[in-house]
Image (cartoon, rainbow, N blue to C red; front, side):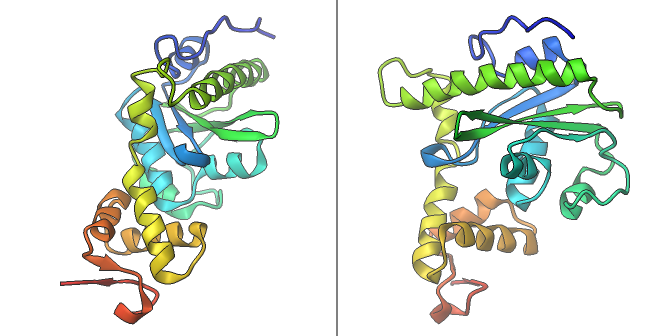
Length: 231
């Protein structure tokens, strides 16, 4: 087994240690829960960011399974036709360089913080030592992010991290408006936004903007539970 990697997460880039210590092509770190719900903190490249955004928009993919199970999710052949349980995400990544996906949960004790999503341009699984290294890195990243979240409103807040934590504020505000309009739960309201975005070939941010600007309503009085675009 490899020795524990020397890492102080976040000194430069929370994703950089994963590329330095593991045989992966790209990485992304996302936060979930609380005021920083489903926020992309950092990504090493455009594809890593796109993989994160696709899963956020579609509401399916390996990161959701990692969050639910609190266990790593390893997909050594992401381009294969095997049924992984996320058909829309699988179709969306066809033809990309994401040949293998490895997602590790970020948690501290009973607190679930998010996930680190790794991809590789060639198929194949992580070795046992690679999985152990990724788990150590994920633990260090978790503690770093937890400290930053707790200090978010303090003068010591990381000036790079703070804007990232708030980058999806509009989506969360729109979710609250859909909740009030539809009477659904917060989770159901976000699903309504995702479903509308997917059905109309929009991004989740575009759909949220329509809600916030009053152009889209999910009030049954304005056209039923599926929502209605208002003039």
